[in-house]
Length: 279
Image 1 (cartoon, rainbow, N blue to C red):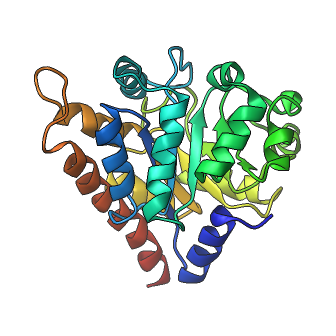
Image 2 (image 1 turned 180 degrees about the horizontal axis):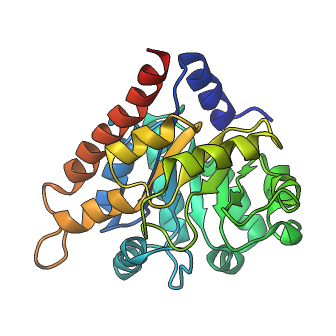
């Protein structure tokens, strides 16, 4: 199965640089603004987009992404509206890979078969479902693969060489390496340790390895990109949305540009890493 994700990473490999993978929460702070952000991210330098599916109990997420999900739910976001956002995005962009990220509960409630059919039809390329371990592949991973969607798995600092082959089984698209133990946005990753961890994972797979959790600045992005195939930025972008909101927590004229300005800076950091490595 060769889809948008595989093609994008093949292109970036030829360019000799890492990917900027950006996370944004569907429906945050409202549907219209989140779609505008989604559409603007590729031009701001995003190579792959993760779109969060809001959930009331996001156990792996830090305060920034938790708050974003709650803002989205308060604004009326649901799975149908999220798929509508993907379709709207695809009307103007048929090349940027888009991955839905979240938890199994909303998918289960929506109905797995219905979810996978609607996701594929809308233009989703892959899924990251953080609370489904490999032992539960029959629940969603295998049906997703059958539907033509990549299933992207997370590896962590505690995923040892004995566990890693199990984690990588049925994984496709890329591997998401969680650079720190804990929740998103909690601490800055150690670039040397991350580079060593990525190298260890690559001894077990030919898939690209993207690094996320705790990457908040262009400097972080540059350091991580030097030793990984991609850098995932989430909490910092979501926090930019929050900081742009008016006193009534409504979006302002700066809500989209707050995200895209930061994304451009992060993209410059990621691209600079490969230039520095070749120099």
